[in-house]
Length: 128
Image (cartoon, rainbow, N blue to C red; front, top):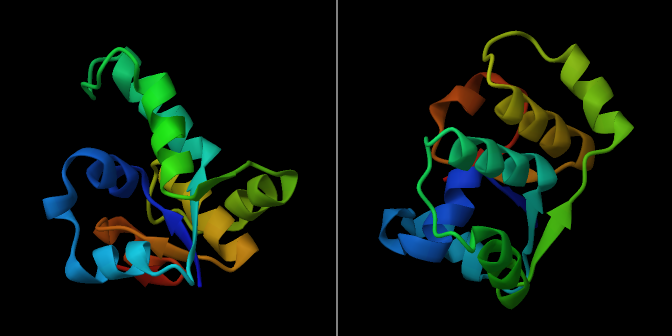
């Protein structure tokens, strides 16, 4: 299974694993699953750090990619097809990062691993 990690899932993996559900931990630890993290989610982290909504260590730019490599999590780039898919999504949710994750999950046929109920109205496979 190919799994797209929501922003909070990666952050919890790295610092607060106890917040992950049993299902999430099982999916993450299953070596048969391919884990992906969107550049959009990384962008979201950068914005939240810059406006003070997310407190991370000063070396977060090095820590996150290092931990991703250690945990065999691949980067998912943003493609024109993803942007096109965003333009076709219904306006149930206005968060641009979440909308892009939905579009990426749909386009790439990924399961979106998230604890965010905002994704439930979209035509996307969600697990938690």
